Length: 101
Image (cartoon, rainbow, N blue to C red; front, side):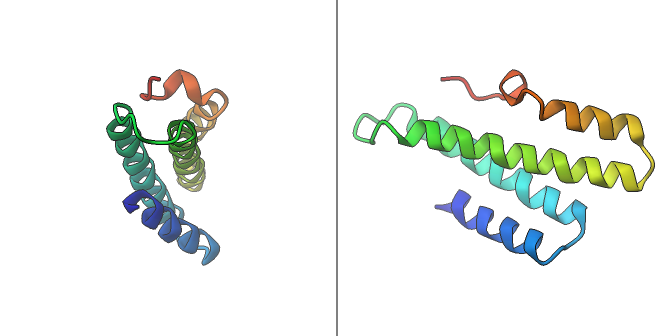
């Protein structure tokens, strides 16, 4: 539930067009919370089988949003190499994800 609350705050900040740095931090924190939830739920036998893929997907989505807004911040600071690197991370999120099923 903490991850979901953080995601709602991220969505509100994004819809209010807050600064990219703030939005990236909120998305990164939501990704961390979803990652923690995924790790804690891995060994629970009484959960529905759909829970783990949803948590993993939410983790990847929040990480991608964080990288997207960090790349926009890098573009504003004219750090084009960093911008490209952050965008390339999103091309295949499963290679950089720390989640393992």
